[in-house]
Length: 409
Image 1: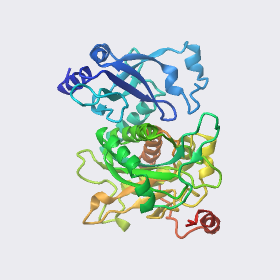
Image 2: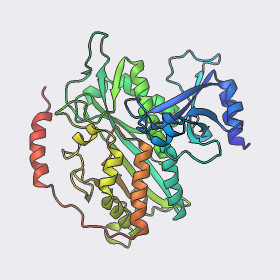
Image 3: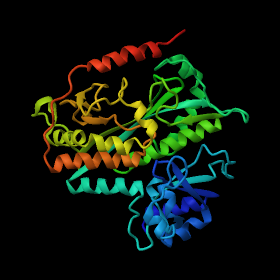
Image 4: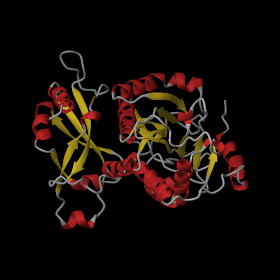
Protein backbone atom coordinates (compact mmCIF):
# COMPACT_ATOMS: atom_id res chain seq x y z
CA UNK A 1 0.00 0.00 0.00
CA UNK A 2 1.45 3.40 -0.96
CA UNK A 3 1.77 6.36 1.40
CA UNK A 4 -1.17 8.20 -0.16
CA UNK A 5 -3.54 5.28 0.47
CA UNK A 6 -2.23 4.90 4.02
CA UNK A 7 -2.83 8.59 4.73
CA UNK A 8 -6.37 8.28 3.32
CA UNK A 9 -7.14 5.34 5.61
CA UNK A 10 -5.62 7.09 8.62
CA UNK A 11 -7.92 10.07 8.00
CA UNK A 12 -10.93 7.78 7.60
CA UNK A 13 -10.23 6.03 10.90
CA UNK A 14 -10.37 9.38 12.71
CA UNK A 15 -13.97 9.93 11.52
CA UNK A 16 -17.32 8.54 12.57
CA UNK A 17 -18.63 8.02 9.02
CA UNK A 18 -17.21 8.28 5.51
CA UNK A 19 -19.50 8.77 2.53
CA UNK A 20 -18.43 6.51 -0.34
CA UNK A 21 -20.15 8.33 -3.20
CA UNK A 22 -20.52 7.44 -6.88
CA UNK A 23 -22.55 8.84 -9.80
CA UNK A 24 -25.68 7.28 -11.26
CA UNK A 25 -26.58 7.65 -14.94
CA UNK A 26 -27.69 11.27 -14.49
CA UNK A 27 -24.70 12.22 -12.35
CA UNK A 28 -26.74 12.25 -9.14
CA UNK A 29 -24.68 11.20 -6.12
CA UNK A 30 -25.47 7.80 -4.63
CA UNK A 31 -23.61 6.49 -1.61
CA UNK A 32 -23.00 4.06 1.17
CA UNK A 33 -22.00 5.52 4.52
CA UNK A 34 -19.10 3.49 5.88
CA UNK A 35 -18.01 3.70 9.53
CA UNK A 36 -14.51 5.17 9.61
CA UNK A 37 -13.19 2.12 11.47
CA UNK A 38 -14.36 -0.19 8.63
CA UNK A 39 -12.74 1.70 5.73
CA UNK A 40 -9.36 -0.03 5.98
CA UNK A 41 -10.95 -3.49 5.88
CA UNK A 42 -13.02 -2.76 2.77
CA UNK A 43 -10.23 -0.86 1.00
CA UNK A 44 -7.71 -3.69 1.49
CA UNK A 45 -10.21 -6.38 0.45
CA UNK A 46 -10.99 -4.80 -2.94
CA UNK A 47 -13.82 -2.38 -2.15
CA UNK A 48 -17.34 -2.45 -0.75
CA UNK A 49 -20.06 -4.39 -2.58
CA UNK A 50 -23.01 -2.49 -4.03
CA UNK A 51 -25.89 -3.42 -6.35
CA UNK A 52 -24.72 -2.59 -9.88
CA UNK A 53 -28.23 -1.50 -10.90
CA UNK A 54 -27.80 1.64 -8.78
CA UNK A 55 -25.29 2.92 -11.36
CA UNK A 56 -28.07 2.92 -13.97
CA UNK A 57 -30.59 4.90 -11.89
CA UNK A 58 -32.07 7.93 -13.63
CA UNK A 59 -33.34 11.20 -12.14
CA UNK A 60 -36.61 9.49 -11.13
CA UNK A 61 -34.59 7.05 -8.95
CA UNK A 62 -36.01 4.12 -10.92
CA UNK A 63 -33.60 1.77 -12.67
CA UNK A 64 -34.24 1.36 -16.40
CA UNK A 65 -34.62 -2.23 -17.52
CA UNK A 66 -31.06 -2.87 -18.64
CA UNK A 67 -31.50 -6.42 -19.89
CA UNK A 68 -28.01 -7.58 -18.96
CA UNK A 69 -28.54 -6.49 -15.33
CA UNK A 70 -31.95 -8.20 -15.17
CA UNK A 71 -30.71 -11.41 -16.80
CA UNK A 72 -27.83 -11.64 -14.32
CA UNK A 73 -30.00 -11.09 -11.25
CA UNK A 74 -28.92 -7.52 -10.42
CA UNK A 75 -25.35 -8.52 -9.48
CA UNK A 76 -23.05 -6.72 -7.07
CA UNK A 77 -20.03 -4.73 -8.09
CA UNK A 78 -17.29 -3.27 -5.90
CA UNK A 79 -16.98 0.41 -5.02
CA UNK A 80 -13.33 1.44 -5.23
CA UNK A 81 -12.51 4.73 -3.44
CA UNK A 82 -10.12 7.21 -5.06
CA UNK A 83 -7.91 8.49 -2.20
CA UNK A 84 -7.11 11.67 -4.15
CA UNK A 85 -10.77 12.71 -3.91
CA UNK A 86 -11.07 12.42 -0.11
CA UNK A 87 -12.27 15.48 1.83
CA UNK A 88 -14.11 16.39 5.02
CA UNK A 89 -17.83 17.21 4.85
CA UNK A 90 -17.59 20.55 6.66
CA UNK A 91 -21.20 21.43 5.78
CA UNK A 92 -22.66 18.35 7.47
CA UNK A 93 -25.31 19.04 10.10
CA UNK A 94 -23.81 16.35 12.33
CA UNK A 95 -22.00 17.62 15.44
CA UNK A 96 -18.22 17.98 15.05
CA UNK A 97 -15.73 15.62 16.62
CA UNK A 98 -13.89 16.18 19.89
CA UNK A 99 -11.26 18.40 18.26
CA UNK A 100 -13.93 20.59 16.64
CA UNK A 101 -13.27 19.19 13.15
CA UNK A 102 -15.90 17.59 10.93
CA UNK A 103 -16.98 14.09 11.93
CA UNK A 104 -17.98 13.06 8.39
CA UNK A 105 -15.70 12.45 5.41
CA UNK A 106 -16.36 11.77 1.74
CA UNK A 107 -14.56 10.01 -1.10
CA UNK A 108 -15.51 9.43 -4.75
CA UNK A 109 -15.63 5.82 -5.92
CA UNK A 110 -15.35 4.09 -9.27
CA UNK A 111 -16.81 0.62 -9.70
CA UNK A 112 -15.41 -2.72 -10.82
CA UNK A 113 -16.63 -6.27 -11.17
CA UNK A 114 -15.22 -8.83 -8.78
CA UNK A 115 -12.67 -9.93 -11.39
CA UNK A 116 -11.24 -6.40 -11.37
CA UNK A 117 -12.58 -5.21 -14.72
CA UNK A 118 -14.26 -1.76 -14.68
CA UNK A 119 -18.07 -1.66 -14.80
CA UNK A 120 -18.84 -0.55 -18.35
CA UNK A 121 -21.87 1.61 -17.53
CA UNK A 122 -20.20 3.51 -14.69
CA UNK A 123 -20.05 7.07 -16.08
CA UNK A 124 -16.85 7.89 -14.18
CA UNK A 125 -15.20 4.88 -15.80
CA UNK A 126 -16.42 6.13 -19.20
CA UNK A 127 -14.75 9.51 -18.64
CA UNK A 128 -11.53 7.85 -17.45
CA UNK A 129 -11.42 5.67 -20.59
CA UNK A 130 -11.51 8.73 -22.86
CA UNK A 131 -8.89 10.52 -20.75
CA UNK A 132 -6.66 7.45 -21.14
CA UNK A 133 -7.24 7.53 -24.92
CA UNK A 134 -6.19 11.18 -24.89
CA UNK A 135 -3.02 10.29 -22.99
CA UNK A 136 -2.23 7.85 -25.79
CA UNK A 137 -1.90 10.90 -28.05
CA UNK A 138 0.48 12.55 -25.60
CA UNK A 139 -2.19 14.99 -24.41
CA UNK A 140 -3.65 15.95 -21.02
CA UNK A 141 -7.12 17.34 -20.28
CA UNK A 142 -7.55 20.63 -18.38
CA UNK A 143 -11.24 21.30 -17.73
CA UNK A 144 -13.94 22.89 -15.58
CA UNK A 145 -17.70 23.32 -15.61
CA UNK A 146 -19.95 26.38 -15.41
CA UNK A 147 -23.20 25.10 -13.94
CA UNK A 148 -26.43 27.09 -13.52
CA UNK A 149 -29.19 26.29 -11.02
CA UNK A 150 -32.37 27.70 -9.55
CA UNK A 151 -33.37 28.48 -6.00
CA UNK A 152 -36.85 27.58 -4.75
CA UNK A 153 -38.76 28.09 -1.53
CA UNK A 154 -39.15 24.83 0.34
CA UNK A 155 -42.88 24.04 0.12
CA UNK A 156 -45.13 23.56 3.12
CA UNK A 157 -46.54 20.10 3.68
CA UNK A 158 -49.91 21.02 2.16
CA UNK A 159 -48.44 22.74 -0.93
CA UNK A 160 -47.66 20.58 -3.95
CA UNK A 161 -45.82 23.13 -6.12
CA UNK A 162 -42.50 24.83 -5.50
CA UNK A 163 -42.28 28.61 -5.93
CA UNK A 164 -39.35 30.80 -6.91
CA UNK A 165 -37.48 32.18 -3.98
CA UNK A 166 -36.62 35.19 -6.14
CA UNK A 167 -39.18 36.39 -8.70
CA UNK A 168 -37.06 39.21 -10.09
CA UNK A 169 -34.81 38.75 -13.14
CA UNK A 170 -31.62 40.72 -12.54
CA UNK A 171 -28.36 39.18 -13.82
CA UNK A 172 -25.10 40.01 -12.06
CA UNK A 173 -27.09 42.06 -9.54
CA UNK A 174 -25.29 43.37 -6.44
CA UNK A 175 -28.55 43.76 -4.48
CA UNK A 176 -29.54 40.13 -5.05
CA UNK A 177 -25.99 39.02 -4.28
CA UNK A 178 -26.20 40.92 -0.99
CA UNK A 179 -29.56 39.31 -0.22
CA UNK A 180 -28.25 35.77 -0.76
CA UNK A 181 -24.67 36.34 0.41
CA UNK A 182 -25.00 34.13 3.53
CA UNK A 183 -26.02 31.21 1.29
CA UNK A 184 -23.39 31.98 -1.36
CA UNK A 185 -20.69 32.30 1.29
CA UNK A 186 -21.60 28.93 2.78
CA UNK A 187 -21.59 27.36 -0.70
CA UNK A 188 -18.16 28.85 -1.38
CA UNK A 189 -16.76 27.62 1.94
CA UNK A 190 -18.22 24.14 1.47
CA UNK A 191 -16.82 23.84 -2.06
CA UNK A 192 -13.46 25.16 -0.90
CA UNK A 193 -13.31 22.68 1.99
CA UNK A 194 -13.93 19.87 -0.51
CA UNK A 195 -10.93 21.02 -2.56
CA UNK A 196 -12.87 22.88 -5.27
CA UNK A 197 -11.58 26.33 -6.24
CA UNK A 198 -14.39 28.83 -6.87
CA UNK A 199 -13.69 31.57 -9.43
CA UNK A 200 -16.97 33.52 -9.24
CA UNK A 201 -20.57 33.46 -7.96
CA UNK A 202 -23.36 35.57 -9.48
CA UNK A 203 -27.06 35.79 -10.33
CA UNK A 204 -28.17 34.86 -13.85
CA UNK A 205 -30.89 35.70 -16.42
CA UNK A 206 -33.73 33.62 -14.90
CA UNK A 207 -35.90 33.99 -11.83
CA UNK A 208 -33.96 32.57 -8.89
CA UNK A 209 -31.16 31.51 -11.26
CA UNK A 210 -27.54 31.51 -10.11
CA UNK A 211 -24.16 30.29 -11.27
CA UNK A 212 -20.90 29.32 -9.64
CA UNK A 213 -17.86 28.93 -11.91
CA UNK A 214 -14.95 26.69 -11.00
CA UNK A 215 -11.25 26.85 -11.78
CA UNK A 216 -10.02 24.12 -14.18
CA UNK A 217 -8.36 20.93 -12.98
CA UNK A 218 -6.34 18.17 -14.65
CA UNK A 219 -7.70 14.85 -15.87
CA UNK A 220 -10.56 13.19 -14.01
CA UNK A 221 -10.44 15.89 -11.31
CA UNK A 222 -12.36 18.28 -13.62
CA UNK A 223 -15.50 16.12 -13.98
CA UNK A 224 -15.10 14.98 -10.36
CA UNK A 225 -15.59 18.59 -9.32
CA UNK A 226 -18.61 18.97 -11.61
CA UNK A 227 -20.13 15.94 -9.89
CA UNK A 228 -19.37 17.19 -6.37
CA UNK A 229 -20.45 20.76 -7.15
CA UNK A 230 -24.05 19.80 -7.82
CA UNK A 231 -24.35 17.65 -4.71
CA UNK A 232 -22.72 20.17 -2.38
CA UNK A 233 -24.83 23.11 -3.62
CA UNK A 234 -28.01 21.10 -3.02
CA UNK A 235 -26.96 20.10 0.49
CA UNK A 236 -25.86 23.58 1.58
CA UNK A 237 -29.09 25.10 0.22
CA UNK A 238 -31.02 22.47 2.17
CA UNK A 239 -29.21 23.60 5.32
CA UNK A 240 -30.59 27.10 4.65
CA UNK A 241 -34.14 25.84 4.06
CA UNK A 242 -34.01 26.21 0.26
CA UNK A 243 -34.50 23.75 -2.58
CA UNK A 244 -32.06 23.89 -5.52
CA UNK A 245 -33.07 22.55 -8.94
CA UNK A 246 -30.73 21.60 -11.77
CA UNK A 247 -33.68 20.93 -14.10
CA UNK A 248 -32.98 22.67 -17.42
CA UNK A 249 -36.32 24.50 -17.73
CA UNK A 250 -38.35 24.07 -14.54
CA UNK A 251 -40.87 26.74 -15.58
CA UNK A 252 -42.14 27.51 -19.09
CA UNK A 253 -41.13 30.90 -20.45
CA UNK A 254 -38.00 31.14 -18.32
CA UNK A 255 -34.35 31.12 -19.35
CA UNK A 256 -32.89 27.63 -19.32
CA UNK A 257 -29.98 26.39 -17.22
CA UNK A 258 -26.90 24.82 -18.75
CA UNK A 259 -23.64 23.09 -17.92
CA UNK A 260 -20.89 24.68 -20.00
CA UNK A 261 -17.81 22.48 -20.35
CA UNK A 262 -14.62 24.54 -20.65
CA UNK A 263 -11.64 22.52 -21.75
CA UNK A 264 -8.21 22.68 -23.32
CA UNK A 265 -5.59 20.08 -24.23
CA UNK A 266 -2.01 20.28 -23.05
CA UNK A 267 1.21 18.40 -23.63
CA UNK A 268 1.71 15.40 -21.37
CA UNK A 269 4.11 17.39 -19.16
CA UNK A 270 1.37 20.08 -18.79
CA UNK A 271 3.69 22.84 -20.00
CA UNK A 272 2.30 23.70 -23.44
CA UNK A 273 -1.29 24.40 -24.50
CA UNK A 274 -1.87 22.15 -27.54
CA UNK A 275 -4.66 24.47 -28.76
CA UNK A 276 -2.24 27.39 -29.25
CA UNK A 277 0.06 27.95 -32.22
CA UNK A 278 1.44 31.45 -32.70
CA UNK A 279 2.23 30.75 -36.38
CA UNK A 280 -1.35 29.82 -37.37
CA UNK A 281 -4.34 31.98 -38.29
CA UNK A 282 -6.05 33.24 -35.10
CA UNK A 283 -3.28 31.30 -33.32
CA UNK A 284 -5.47 28.17 -33.49
CA UNK A 285 -3.28 25.06 -33.73
CA UNK A 286 -4.01 22.12 -36.04
CA UNK A 287 -4.91 20.11 -32.93
CA UNK A 288 -7.54 22.70 -31.98
CA UNK A 289 -8.98 22.83 -35.51
CA UNK A 290 -9.31 19.05 -35.88
CA UNK A 291 -10.66 18.74 -32.34
CA UNK A 292 -13.28 21.43 -32.92
CA UNK A 293 -14.21 19.82 -36.26
CA UNK A 294 -14.88 16.57 -34.39
CA UNK A 295 -17.15 18.35 -31.92
CA UNK A 296 -19.17 19.91 -34.73
CA UNK A 297 -19.32 16.65 -36.71
CA UNK A 298 -20.72 14.81 -33.67
CA UNK A 299 -22.84 17.66 -32.27
CA UNK A 300 -26.11 15.70 -32.63
CA UNK A 301 -24.67 12.81 -30.61
CA UNK A 302 -23.30 15.24 -28.02
CA UNK A 303 -26.79 16.76 -27.72
CA UNK A 304 -28.32 13.33 -27.10
CA UNK A 305 -25.75 12.37 -24.47
CA UNK A 306 -25.77 15.71 -22.64
CA UNK A 307 -29.55 16.32 -22.70
CA UNK A 308 -30.70 13.36 -20.60
CA UNK A 309 -34.35 14.40 -20.18
CA UNK A 310 -37.10 15.61 -22.53
CA UNK A 311 -37.13 18.86 -20.57
CA UNK A 312 -33.50 19.52 -21.57
CA UNK A 313 -34.51 20.10 -25.20
CA UNK A 314 -36.82 22.97 -24.18
CA UNK A 315 -33.69 24.93 -23.33
CA UNK A 316 -32.24 24.80 -26.87
CA UNK A 317 -32.84 27.26 -29.75
CA UNK A 318 -33.22 30.23 -27.40
CA UNK A 319 -30.88 33.15 -26.65
CA UNK A 320 -27.57 32.11 -25.09
CA UNK A 321 -28.21 28.46 -26.03
CA UNK A 322 -27.15 26.25 -28.96
CA UNK A 323 -29.09 26.76 -32.19
CA UNK A 324 -26.82 25.26 -34.88
CA UNK A 325 -23.79 22.95 -35.07
CA UNK A 326 -21.39 25.88 -35.25
CA UNK A 327 -18.43 27.62 -33.66
CA UNK A 328 -17.36 31.21 -33.21
CA UNK A 329 -14.76 33.24 -31.37
CA UNK A 330 -16.14 34.62 -28.09
CA UNK A 331 -19.78 34.45 -29.27
CA UNK A 332 -22.36 33.21 -26.78
CA UNK A 333 -24.69 32.50 -29.71
CA UNK A 334 -22.49 29.62 -30.94
CA UNK A 335 -22.66 26.03 -29.71
CA UNK A 336 -18.88 25.85 -29.38
CA UNK A 337 -17.40 29.11 -28.13
CA UNK A 338 -13.69 29.51 -28.79
CA UNK A 339 -11.48 31.56 -26.49
CA UNK A 340 -8.15 32.50 -28.05
CA UNK A 341 -4.85 32.79 -26.26
CA UNK A 342 -2.14 35.28 -27.13
CA UNK A 343 1.64 35.40 -27.30
CA UNK A 344 1.55 36.85 -23.79
CA UNK A 345 -0.96 34.23 -22.58
CA UNK A 346 -0.73 31.04 -24.69
CA UNK A 347 -2.47 29.10 -21.93
CA UNK A 348 -5.64 31.13 -22.55
CA UNK A 349 -6.80 29.06 -25.54
CA UNK A 350 -9.77 26.82 -24.76
CA UNK A 351 -13.16 25.68 -26.04
CA UNK A 352 -16.47 26.14 -24.24
CA UNK A 353 -18.95 23.40 -25.11
CA UNK A 354 -22.30 25.13 -24.49
CA UNK A 355 -24.47 22.17 -25.49
CA UNK A 356 -24.96 20.33 -22.16
CA UNK A 357 -28.02 20.86 -20.02
CA UNK A 358 -27.71 21.59 -16.31
CA UNK A 359 -29.25 18.14 -15.77
CA UNK A 360 -26.35 16.46 -17.59
CA UNK A 361 -23.86 14.11 -15.95
CA UNK A 362 -20.44 15.84 -15.86
CA UNK A 363 -18.68 12.52 -16.52
CA UNK A 364 -20.81 11.81 -19.61
CA UNK A 365 -20.28 15.40 -20.79
CA UNK A 366 -16.53 14.82 -20.51
CA UNK A 367 -16.62 11.41 -22.20
CA UNK A 368 -18.83 12.63 -25.07
CA UNK A 369 -16.72 15.74 -25.69
CA UNK A 370 -13.45 13.82 -25.63
CA UNK A 371 -14.74 11.00 -27.85
CA UNK A 372 -15.98 13.50 -30.46
CA UNK A 373 -12.81 15.59 -30.34
CA UNK A 374 -10.56 12.54 -30.55
CA UNK A 375 -12.41 11.35 -33.64
CA UNK A 376 -11.77 14.72 -35.27
CA UNK A 377 -8.12 14.51 -34.28
CA UNK A 378 -7.60 10.93 -35.43
CA UNK A 379 -9.41 11.42 -38.76
CA UNK A 380 -7.97 14.91 -39.29
CA UNK A 381 -11.43 16.36 -39.91
CA UNK A 382 -11.65 19.76 -41.61
CA UNK A 383 -13.03 22.62 -39.55
CA UNK A 384 -15.97 24.40 -41.25
CA UNK A 385 -16.00 28.23 -41.39
CA UNK A 386 -16.89 29.98 -38.18
CA UNK A 387 -20.35 31.43 -37.63
CA UNK A 388 -20.57 35.15 -38.38
CA UNK A 389 -23.30 37.39 -36.99
CA UNK A 390 -26.57 36.38 -35.39
CA UNK A 391 -29.13 34.36 -37.42
CA UNK A 392 -32.39 36.18 -38.14
CA UNK A 393 -34.38 33.59 -36.20
CA UNK A 394 -32.15 34.14 -33.19
CA UNK A 395 -32.51 37.93 -33.43
CA UNK A 396 -36.30 37.55 -33.43
CA UNK A 397 -36.08 35.23 -30.43
CA UNK A 398 -33.93 37.78 -28.67
CA UNK A 399 -36.56 40.48 -29.14
CA UNK A 400 -39.30 38.22 -27.79
CA UNK A 401 -37.23 37.00 -24.87
CA UNK A 402 -35.91 40.40 -23.86
CA UNK A 403 -39.45 41.68 -23.41
CA UNK A 404 -39.99 38.76 -21.02
CA UNK A 405 -36.70 39.15 -19.19
CA UNK A 406 -36.64 42.95 -18.94
CA UNK A 407 -36.24 43.74 -15.22
CA UNK A 408 -39.06 45.63 -13.50
CA UNK A 409 -38.23 47.80 -10.53
